[in-house]
Image (tube, rainbow, N blue to C red):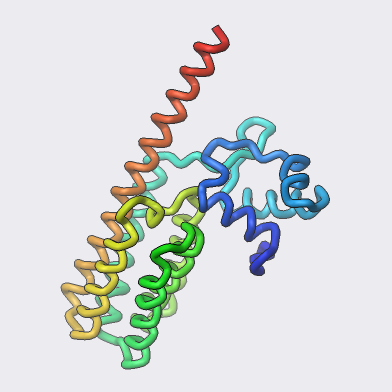
Length: 227
């Protein structure tokens, strides 16, 4: 496992990618990263290797670049997660304890307080909410499966919560999910959780299409200048 301690080079590079400092397709060179962060090449090499292992970076020829997402990949990952998030919310409504509700409310309050946070900070508090929802189902296997899917979702360079207006909508949707879980309304809890993740999927697809269009336009501009 990579060193994910706060302030580690891995976590700093990961946050920089999530915050959009390195865009999809950006080449990361050891010497340049070492100079930027004021460290030797050895910790840079280790951090880049860990980011590549996590799927955040990928090789394009001989170069390590920030991962470029495909539409097919997004559909596969999010469609699985939509189903499992619905199950988790349904089971949470059935099995939750009073303590589970307290933890969910605390996570929601943290989200409300992170409205002006960085994309990386928003991603972290958003994950806490979902993790507490999963754990409210009191099914360890389901928590494990969703945690694995979350790793895939978090490897994307730019989180969906960074898009204009999405954070406020996500907070409101989370509140509705908590309300359904509190009422033990299994059907509505499941529906709301599935709709919440479907909206995230659709937004991710828009982002991928936009990135592909920008990359295509950039390639055209390069060819025109070279010609």
